[in-house]
Image (cartoon, rainbow, N blue to C red; front, side):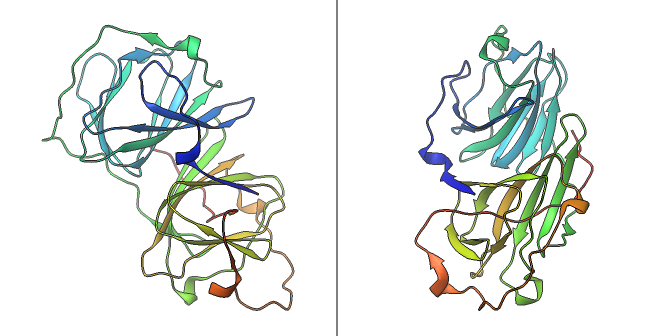
Length: 272
């Protein structure tokens, strides 16, 4: 298990001058966290080899895909696929930061960023936002919006964990799946192999196979997270450790900081 706060990671140089921090790099794909200031507009560009998934975690933006047509109105919870050879650019239309994860497959290569003639975007405020899929109950007690991406065999799920003993479930682990969790809102703690670790917004948590984990909430505010599973979540890869004679985790068992893990997800259908 590993936990670090995204705000403390190094910002990588990039052609669009965004606040980009690489989170994961494996042979099949890379995953980066991207933040844009209010009214910021990325440069119009295209990738000839890479396909990207945009996973929106905060704020609102217009996303222009292609050189014609109307932009997509993005909000937190949307997942969008941008194929090779599709020009695209983004305009932050919200009052605060616009943040999203960008999964690139094959792994991101700065040489595969071709800048195109600049096009000024304006807020298409009269257009409706993209709809979100319905929330569903997850086996771990969370309420989630699940996405499954057949393209790169990765799954995503936005989840909310409430402070309700009736929804508190036993920690579980996976034998094959590596899971990453981004804390979006709220604070609480993550249980890893029976130990509790504080979590707060922008914490990025890696849970390795074999680590029993659960998100715990002790506050009125929901703990909202985004879970990324590689390979994609499979209910057959969910296991429970044998229960031992241990007391319930509470305020007294929370460690100072940081290490963590989070909520699990359920297979769904991605809308791109």
